Structures are given as structure tokens and as C-alpha cells.
Length: 76
Length: 208
Image (tube, rainbow over all chains, first blue to last red; front, side):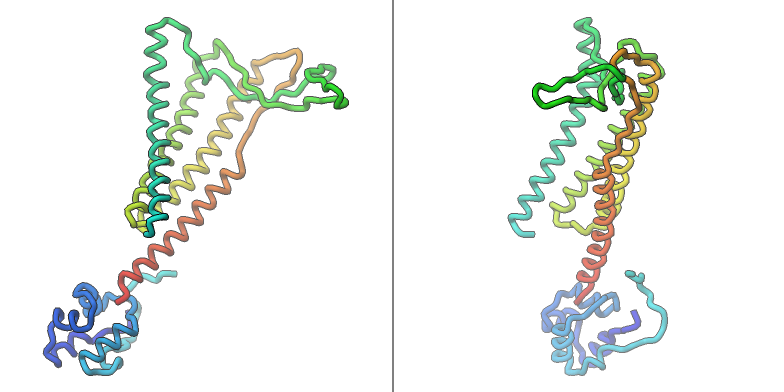
């Protein structure tokens, strides 16, 4: 997936653990882990807004576009 | 899944289960109970596989049917079953083998339909195996209908060489029901829909 989620970097900068962030944002630890490891296929705006509120950042700080071939199967 | 739909799915699964066990029971009766009873009672066995469906047309001049007050009636072609009481073994064995294949395909169909219904009832309708199962069901349905048609043609082809009548002229029977073939195509299309459903479910599971 060319979109990378830089959650790990922001979590270190803010000194927040995965468990604390999941509880604060209101999503499961498993889902947050999926997001952190770049396995997610889509992110809801509500989740993005909750992460930005908790980590005090902009969406652009969390998401990064990386050029290159998709490493996931093409559905079509 | 809502309660009403669950009930429908559960009923469907049970109905398919009944068909599955009924088929095995009938097979067991035919393969075991009938020969045992025949041997015990000494009665001649009923041999449904010694007969063949053939097409019969009345010979010119023969009048097998008349009408009462409805003008003239004409019987221009009927499908009949002709039974041979001493058919050669090669005909009986090959017919049995053919119908055995058809029955096997039918059981294969029921088995996968049962598994499909069980997965749907368990809430895993878009299990990737279900896509494969739907394709198998479509293939089995199509194969059953085509093989049955060929088998009936072959049996009638052999039978008309032997059967004679002073009233009828005989022809071969070839029955392939197009609605069954269309139903098979519907299953193939459904498989593609289920594949899309599987991908959508995966996407949903990986949507945070």
C-alpha cells in the first residue's frame, strides 16, 4: 500500500503506548496494531480525527505517500 | 444476522440435511436391503436398470388413440419406458455404472450444498471456501444433467435396436433440461458475487 501510517514515530514522540492510545481513541488494540503495521486497507475519518485529537497532530503528520509498486493483491 | 433470516437459513440447512440422509438411506436400501430381501424371500428382483426410455411414434395406419366428440385425435410421439427381462450383462453393468456416476454427482452436490448452508448459518457466508463450493455446485449440476442426457440417449440407442412393435416406430431419447443448465450458470455467477463479497468483507475487517 503506497500510503504509510507513521503512528509508531508519533507515539514515541508523544510517549504514548499502543494500549493507552487504543483506549483513548476508542478502537481495539488489534485494529490499532493493524493500522500501526500498515496492514489496514482503509481508515475511517472518525478514527483519523480521534487519533489526531489524541496525538495533537494533523492528518498529514500521520499519513505519508510512498511511491512504488503496491505490495497487496489487486482486487480487480 | 437477524432472527428471521437465521430461521430461514436454519430451515434451509435442515431441509438439505434431510435430502442428504434420505438419499443415503435410499441408496442403502437399494444396495443392501433389496438384494437381501430378494435372497431371503426368493422373489425375482425388480430391475429398474434393465429398462430404457425411448421415443415411440405410431406407425402409419395404426390408430392408438381416438377422441370422443373432439374431432380426430392423433398421437404423434410419446416417451415410453421399455423393460427387458433378460438384458445382456454388458448393458446392465454399463447402465448401472452410468447411473452410479449420476448418483455420485448428486451426492457430491448435496454434500457441498450442506457445507455451504452450514457456513452461512454460522455467519461466515463469505468464507473463501464458499466461492469454490458454488463453482463446484454449478459444475456438478451441469455435469449431472449432461451425463444423464447422454446416458438416456445411449440406453435408447441400444434399446431401439432390439425392441420391435407392430404399433409403434421407435426413436432415441435425448433429454437435457435447459433450465437446469441455466440454474448451473446462475450458480457460477453467484460464485463471482460471493468472491466480491469475500473481498469486501476482508476490506471491512481491515478498515480501522
